Length: 538
Image 1 (cartoon, rainbow, N blue to C red):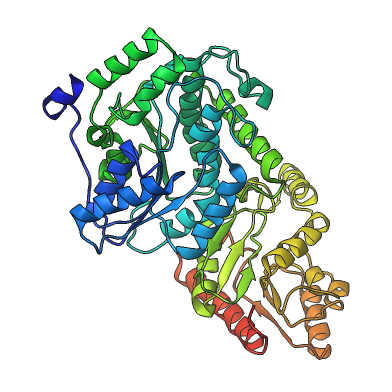
Image 2 (cartoon, helix red, strand yellow):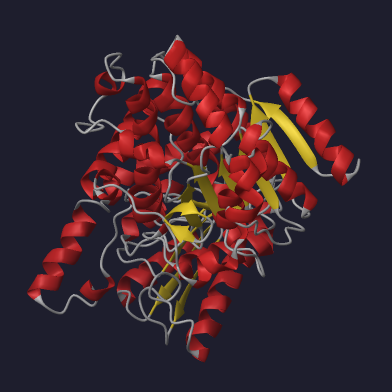
């Protein structure tokens, strides 16, 4: 009945021109995912779909090309959302072939069904509907972040398919342990409802609160309810409730459900409508296009959201390895075809927009891939602590420097990052430039701590750009060591600049601050280019 009345009573379709944009859709070959893929292609996007079965993917491509033409930009690749190691391999490979990602739609899923476990020995509802797709987001997030910084580009969007059935989640859910998730005593509808609750929590209290906001990312993460939809998933009611009840539920849902095309309208709205940005609806759950939903108390519980976030990371690391999770706070910029790499260590005030712009400048000048790792695990010093002109500020600033930002704890981590990534380095201290350095050329800008003894350990060319706030004698000592070591290097003081003028404390809104900031990064690029030219490319 709903399918019959939908064109009159149901939500209206809204989609906008997507020419030049790239979309990735999990579950994109069937049902709602297929309709989203179809709409994206017809509106100019390049689309990648993923499902488990090749025949489904090829059939979807053939059908869409019949409508959009043989030149339609659409590809399919296989992936099982119930296999975390496979997800890692597939989407690491995806990042190597694409240099942008504008739209990520998470549409794979299992409907209400009996308890069962995946390849990873995890409740299949939880892994396929939430955990596997959450891992996809983690793996491709650097590509979304990179796209968000392209000129004249709308904010990338992440859209999860959730459901009003999140109201059926168990009342005693805690997201505390895998043992809690792998409980076959949980009812079939509750298993499903728990995953839809996880999606709403994960978007709002995970992606938005723990990634997008702290990093000032121009990315939107949303979840949507498609309505009851006439797809093959409705047949799973028969498996969930064998016998007459399952047959009745399937019949009712098919009779009352929306068509798959109408079921796609919520996601199409969330993915493309300008209204989302105009109204600042980041992290929202939509029960229909342009209709923010009314979540349950569970879905509005930040403590439960934090527990889900932590549990999801723990399970992925347990199943894939300690290095499975891509650093949410790391920034990567530059062309994927780059043969030169730079590691850019931001200052204690965190991954600021000024630092990101500096990384972009280096990437553009050197045609390099620039990695900005998160050594502080999302934490940062407060700009209000500087200058440390009160005892309270001193305690806070030096407390952070001696704990979260302690150099002695970071040097070996940096070496491992460089060796594993096989990249070159724009660094922070001369310690990593000593014997057996993995780097070709290194540098420091407005260094807070300078030890001339460390300068004596240099084994590669090194540049220091100091501010007027650095100790004059230490800067002079560095200059003398570098001038006499026969390796090569530059030490220069910017006499009108302050500590942090090329990092988080840069004043790009002032003509002099902007000019000296740009001069500093260009000087770094010139110095690096001089020595990188003489080295074999990686």
